[in-house]
Image 1: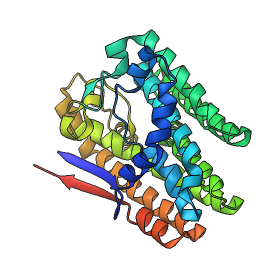
Image 2: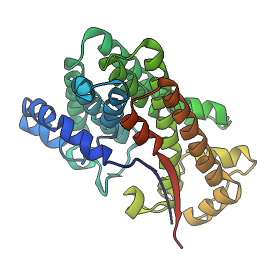
Image 3: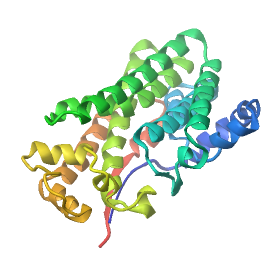
Length: 308
């Protein structure tokens, strides 16, 4: 079994982020009808997107100035997660049935729409325009993904572009808005946006590996889950580009996993995650962040834990 994690130290950044926005988040959710709030609170959030906004602000100055931005990104992240599970018909998230399985499509769509409206409510107009562009990128990524699933040709550069649209747009937006809220220059905000973009795509490589080889203890999903559903994720696309037609036969998922690994798909994703993280940290250094803020993102690593 493999666990690949992007880990931050020395302080618990996610706990710090949760503490920073817990009170305003609770207040915002309290304005929602009970049925809507039940769906919102059904899945546990790791606050990772909000954490990026707060870390970007902390790199520049006072992180408390980005509290409303971080709250907006947390709400937008939950909106996107609900829609993602609905569109892909993912059966589980965080070791439990997906929200659409538990509550039905209509309640999930209504809740997701409410969350995105609540997110925009937190922002000034220039901030809202940046978030809107990020969400449009996510939508465009899903549209392209559907179109590619209907084609036989597979181009890894095209898949990487779609993966970035779907999985880096919000992380890049979080870092840019957090930086600007703390008073960053345009150059600093651009570097932190690139930092978030690279971290988001690195996390996508990590998630795709975990969805095949991680199993329930790591990913909250069954072992070989993406292969069982014959999804063309990044390890699979890398294997196909190496000349292996992964889904040419009706092989069992475990055999498909071996085929992808032997073709180098797994290792390619691991290497890409490491390269993206190194590039992200270079963007962070260009910002010349404050001392503590430099230590925490610089303490990020992509960790590969193999257990037999």
